[in-house]
Length: 147
Image (cartoon, rainbow, N blue to C red; front, side, top):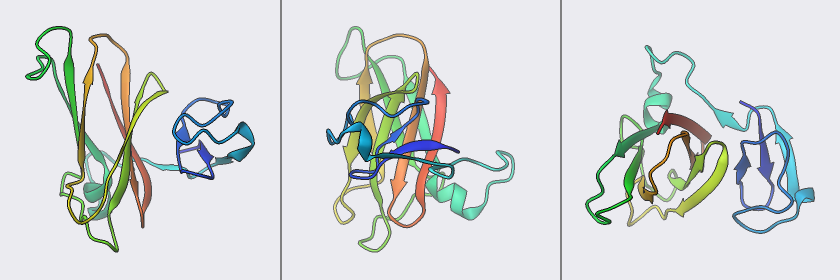
């Protein structure tokens, strides 16, 4: 899948043009490049490969937040139907969240002490939530759900 990638931090814009500045690292628009293979998607959702099973973000939306009692939906994303390894030589570097193709948040991960997962507390509302996981060896993988 095509994306516009920041050459500084790896952020991928899901919009048709690069932003004026990167929402993650602040790099200028000139730091972006279009890549036809920026994001990997599932080839056949009914017949996943081993690589896809380890890299596709799994998204769970919980309508009632246990932390913020009113006006909050929890979004959990773990990476892989089979848990992705978190080793120094192979790990998920970060997980990016988008709402209606607009960047919402990035969670940075380190391999030795963390699991390949992240959670956000969203204000209620509709739209499409996309999650991109960045693997240091196998690139960026996307999945999305309707909120």
